[in-house]
Length: 184
Image (cartoon, rainbow, N blue to C red; front, side):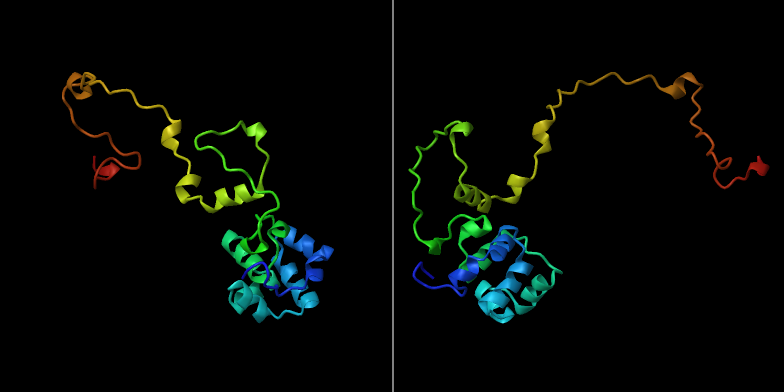
């Protein structure tokens, strides 16, 4: 779909305050119900547009399952032609070109963090490229490196100083293996 292709939802549905609030909160149960009520869409039409199963749409609408996957949020936005700004996403590819393109940055040069304005599209772009290893903390980097081990002299044997007895002490519950306290 391109920018000229109309969406399933009329623009007046997306302009409603209750629809905008549901989309901003990612409350897709409420949003899908409002799309059914004001947009005249069925659960099957929502499901096919968003590449979801009708059963999945049903569980979302009933509230027994929430949409937490970034990929699914993007499929809903693209399938129903919901502008990215209503969902906290970067402008979607079908929305056309952004009004003010950002100039390309020189490689290796990063301005100070206070000088960079926050851009939702940059945040979304970074988030889509995260991997599991980016999210896992490397604890080895936090602990100091172990010092090289020196061989220490062996401690004096406790059995040599006590006459060489290698008998094990009795266990707390009994006198020894298989021997009762009365047989001693």
